[in-house]
Image (cartoon, rainbow, N blue to C red; front, side, top):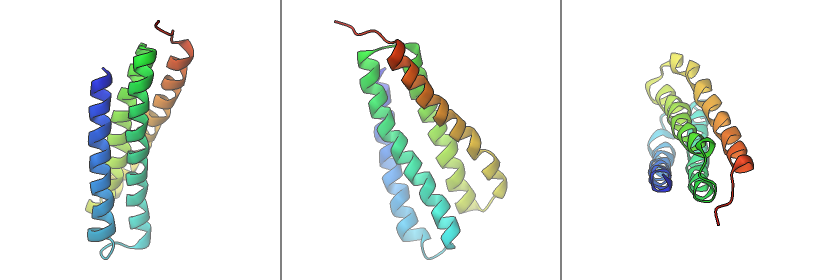
Length: 126
């Protein structure tokens, strides 16, 4: 499972860097400041949670609990929904996509809660 989370973290980080570059170079001249700021929030949260997935892989190796695995999956799904909806909102201009973003944020919050509980309840393997 650790390998899955490391691969997912690496892909999310790779895409996050690409989206950041896309926003900085291709979108900067085309978007208003508020739209660009929204896009950058998506990039920032994607990068934060790519790094969080590396932490999940490490924690899961130490305390392999269902809660820790759940945290990893919530980070993946939450990032795709949160950041993905912001990217599509800005690029496509479909304001209805903004209604989806909070579901991604809720998944990210739940992921952090699961990670904390998984580490709290986990046992150290000798």
